[in-house]
Image (cartoon, rainbow, N blue to C red; front, side, top):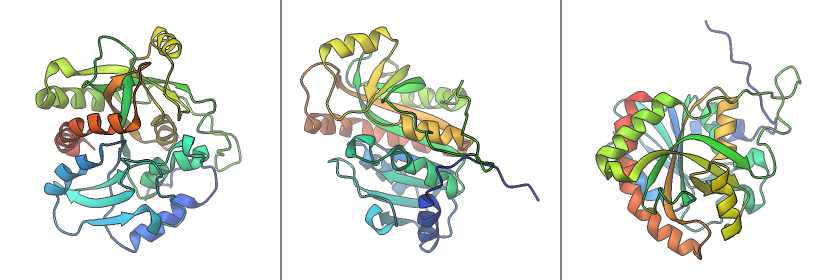
Length: 283
């Protein structure tokens, strides 16, 4: 019998309580948690279409301590089902730091996935393009990120012995998963619109100014958004493999509305759904 993993935690007990509620609805144990960002919730349709019987869908509001999202384009439901003999937990929408929640809640999808037994985390998001060579319509597979949200997702976390959660992050996004995702995306969406890149995370909710866009590109950023990093860092701290997929909805630094972001995101949902199906056996 293997010894239990000694994992860090903020100690709020929220994922444990939610996991208990989920287990009252299903006995499936997911191998991966998948988060669908703004306007990307319909990507779950491809997964549902390939699923076997016994899937469940639970509104976030029915999960104790899981705030329903307040952002348009986030369905606010957790779907758990089996695809190809492997159970997946698909979060249709996330909770954001800019909604006024602390980092422990902004990273809740990763924490709950780990609590349910998943060892892989797939994060998706609608983003603004910083690099002129990454035009709107591109799907960017992350190889790294820059955290400019003003805080670290692991502040306040403790190891079981009470020490701070010092976590090394030389490779948050696993190279093997990234390469497999890139190959799949190029098959389904075309090589010219799928590439590697670096995600820059800001706190939001305001979009970037032109000057900020130039600065972020100068720092090496390919795309910019307001999420993913809390979940990615938390997942890494919990020993999970992480895959990041960023869809470019618009060029950053120019006028854009959230409604325009949602419309552009719908075009990427089908491709992301197909990529997820291609990678199921790798989770």
